[in-house]
Length: 153
Length: 153
DNA sequence: ATTGAACCTATAGTGGCTTTAGGTCCTATG
DNA sequence: CATAGGACCTAAAGCCACTATAGGTTCAAT
Ligand SMILES: [Zn+2]
Ligand SMILES: [Zn+2]
Ligand SMILES: [Zn+2]
Ligand SMILES: [Zn+2]
Image 1 (cartoon, rainbow over the protein chains, first blue to last red):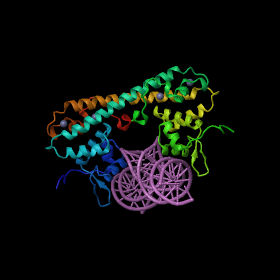
Image 2 (image 1 turned 60 degrees about the vertical axis):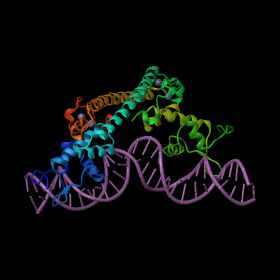
Image 3 (image 1 turned 120 degrees about the vertical axis):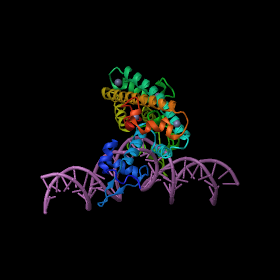
Image 4 (image 1 turned 180 degrees about the horizontal axis):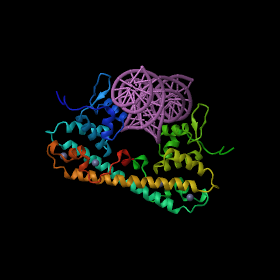
C-alpha cells in the first residue's frame, strides 16, 4: 500500500540516522514501539523513512526523559492527529513536575555535598568532615534533603 | 570478643531503625557491604548496634547519591580512622561534579519542557506543540540540551 | 571464490534493589 | 501444651531501558 517505491535501508543506516544503536532498534521492535519490520530475502530488516521518523520521535521523547510507557502513549496520540491533545499535555505537564521535583532535591543535595567538601581540611579520616557527615544525618543542613534515590533520578 | 553483652535484635528491627527494608539488609550482606550476620539457634540473623551504625552510614551515603561501589570505598576508609582522607575527599568531590553536571542538564530539560507545555493551546493533536516539538529537535532551543538518559540520571 | 562487515537470534548482564514463592521459626494467646 | 499468625529464611525472578556477548548467516566488494 504505502511507500512501495521509496528507497529502503538496513537497520544500521536507520540506527545511525536516528542516533541510536542497532540493538536499541531491535529492542524497540520487540517491545512494540516500532512495528515488526519487513524483511528482505535474507531475513534482514528493511526500513522506510516513515520508520526513521517514528524512531526519531521515540529517541527525542526519551531524550526528554519520558518513560517508554509515556512514549508509547505519546506515539499513540501522534498517530491520531484529529484527536484532542489533552492527554499528551497531561503527560508532559506531569513529567515537567517530576523534573522540577528532581531539580529541587538535586539542588539540596549539591548544597550538602558542597558544604561537606568545603569543610574537609585534608587530614586524617577520623577528622574528615565527609566521613563525619556521612556517619550522622544530624550534621546535615536540609533535614529532609536526601530522600533516597529519588533525589538522584 | 566484642559486644558480647550488648543487646541484639532481629533484621526487622535493624531495618526499621535504619529506615530501609529487610530485603535491602540481606542484599547488603550478600554484596558484602555488611558482614555476614551471626545467627541464633533458629538460623535467624542477630545484630548489634555496630551493624546499625554501619547500615545507617550506608543508607546515608546512598541517600547522598553515592554508588554502592563508592560506599564500599568510603566504608573501607571509615574503618581506618588513622589513614589520610584524600581518597574520601576525591570521591566526594567527584560526586559533587557529577551532581552539578546533572543539575545543569536537568535545568535545560526543565526549560524545554516548560516552553513546550506553555505553548500548547489545547487543541487537536496535529496542532499540539508538544507533539510537534517531540517530532523535531530543531524546534528545541538548547540544541544539545538533552543528551539521552544522561540528562535524567 | 573469498573476505570481512553487517546482519540475525537468543541470552545474560547492568544497578540497586523489590517481589515472589515456598517454606521455617518465634511468640502470644487459649 | 497446642495453635495461629507474624517474622524470618533462601533462591530466584522482576524492574527499567537498554547494552553486551556468543555463535551463526547474509551481503557487498574484491
Ligand atoms: Zn577529608
Ligand atoms: Zn543527611
Ligand atoms: Zn497540546
Ligand atoms: Zn530536542
